[in-house]
Image (cartoon, one colour):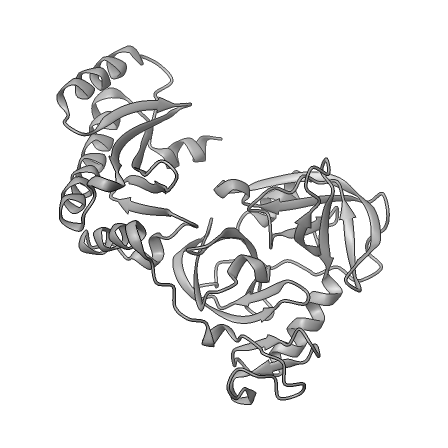
Length: 364
C-alpha cells in the first residue's frame, strides 16, 4: 500500500476557490483534473497546486451536478505520472481501499479502509460505501484499490457516521468523460433535468435546448466580487503586488508567498479579527535556547508583530480588528509583515540553525 500512496502523491491536486477548498486528481487521458462539482461550484476559474504542479489559475471546463463531477483544464502536465481507472469487476465487498486527498488544507493524506457495499443507491446512483476516513477537503479525491487503480471519486460522508464514506464509481466518470470529449474542448455541463450534456454553442439564454430547464455553464458564471472587509483585504493584496486570484484559499482566507515565507491571512467575521500569520522556518533539533531568547527579544522590540511557536513551526503574526482597517493603513501593516517575514526567515536559518520547511519535508 505504501508504494501506491507514493504513486498518487504527484497526481493528487489541491483546489481552492473563494468559497471552498477540496481535492482533485490528474488523469493523463483525457489530460484533465477530476474533482467534485460542489468543490468548484460558482466559479469560472479555480486555483490548483500539487506536489509536482506549480500553483496556477485554471479554467473549469465541465460541471455535472447530477453525478457531482467537474473537469478542470491543466497546463505543464508533462511531468505528472499516469494512473489507471479500474474495470467494473475489480472491486467487491471487503476489498481494501485507500482514500487520498487534502483534508483541512493539508498537503497530502491517505487513509485506508474496506468496501462495505458496492451498490449503495442514492438518487438513483449507485455509490461505493466504505470506512476509509473522509474529512472536509477530501471531496473530489480518488478512491484507490490495492492494485493502485482508481475505483471511485470521493464524494460525501454521513455526518457523525463514524467513517461512513461514499465514492462515485469510475463507470460514471468514464461515461461523463466520453460525453464531455464530444464537445471537442468546448465548455459544457450536464442538465440536471434531462441529463443531456450541453455545450456553449448549444445554449441560448441559459436554457437547455433539449428540455428547456435552466443550465449554468461554467463559462457563464458571474466572476467573484468581494464585498466589505474582504474587498479591502483583496485591495491590499493587489497593492502589495500579489495576484489576488492565486491567493484565495476558501471563505475569508488568503495565502501569500513572500520570498521563503508563507503568509496566511484570515478574517473572522464574528469577532472582527483579521490575522496575518507568516509561517517561517522550523525549529532546529538542537541548541534551541538561543533561538528562543532571540524570539523573545524580538517580541519586545518589534512593533505590531509577534513571534510564536506552533508545533515545530515558527510563526510571526499581525493582528488587527476590522474597524481599524482601511486600504492605506492595511497596506503598510501587511507590507511590513511580508518584508519582515522574509527577512527573519533567513536570519533564523542562517544564524540560529532553524530548518527550511522543504528541507524538513525532504528528510522525512
